[in-house]
Image (cartoon, rainbow, N blue to C red):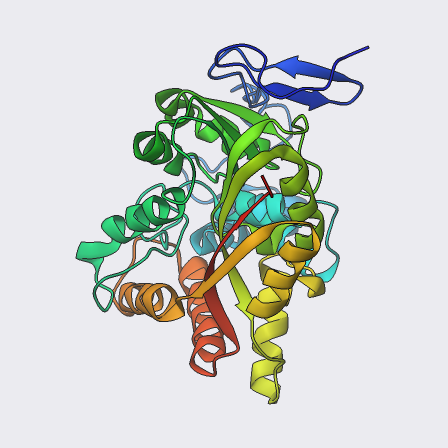
Length: 371
C-alpha cells in the first residue's frame, strides 16, 4: 500500500494519483497528448467528384446544364467558408459559445482553450494576469506590471521550500516564481493539460514539475508543501471552499497560502448590470457560487482552518489600469480578426461597467496553516 507523505528525499514530492502515489523526480514530464496531422491526400479534395474551373471559364459556365445548380451551391458554400474564416472563429470558439448555453464539467479549460496561447488582448506575450501597476496603465508598463504582480504574491511565500503553483496558466510566471523565492521544489498544477504542454519550455526553465489536476482535489500528498500560490484562478475553481480545504490539507504546519482573486462586492441592480454580470459568468465559465465578496472569501479561508488571513483590495492598481490599456488597444487596429475584435469590445464594455459601478474588485489574500 502506498505510504502518505510529503517530501521523500531531496527534491522529490509525493503526488497522489488515483489509487497510488507517484514521485515527481523528472523536472518536466510530458504533459500534452499527441496531435495527428491530417495527410495531404485526405485534405486534397481528390476523389470527391469536385470539378475545378478550367481555362475556358468558371465551372458554372462550363458544366453540363444539369450540374449548374450544384456548382453554384458549391461556390456559395466556399464563399461562406471564406467569410467565416475572416471572422477568425475556430472550432474551439464554437465550443466556447456552446458552453454559454450548457457548461460542461470543465468550463475553465474550455475558456482558456478558446483564448489560446497568443491572445491579442494579453497585456504582454505569454502573460494572462492583469498586472499590478504603478502608473495609470500604458503599454510601456504592461510586462513590468504583470511581473510585479507575480513577485508581490510570491514574496509572501517561504523561500527554499516546496511550492505549488495552482492554475499556472501558460507557465510564464513559474520561472519568475523560481527566481523570486528559490524553492527547493516547484510543482505546477493545471486542470488544462494543453496549457501544461504549451508551457513545457517555461516549466523546464523553472525546474517545475507539471501535474494535471483539479484545484478542489489537489493530486498532492497531505503536508507536502511549504507554500501555495494561485494567481487569478480561484474564481474558476469548482469551489473556493473546497480549494481552501485542500490548501489546509496540502500545506505543512506553518505553510503559507498566497493568492489573487476577483470578488463580487454587490449584486447587480439595473438591467445593464445584470446582463453584464450574467454574460461574464457564462463567457468565463464561472459558476454562480463564484460571486463572493472579499469578506466572504476571507471567511471561507478561515472556515477551512487557515489563520492569519489578510485581504488587500487593490482594484485601482489592477483592474482600472489593465482596462485602460486594453481599451486603448481596441481603439486602434489590433492584429486580430474582425470577430475577435467585436467580441472583445462587447466584453470590455461589460467589465468596465462592473468595475465603474464597483460591483467587482481585485484582492490579494494571504493565509497560513497553524504551526
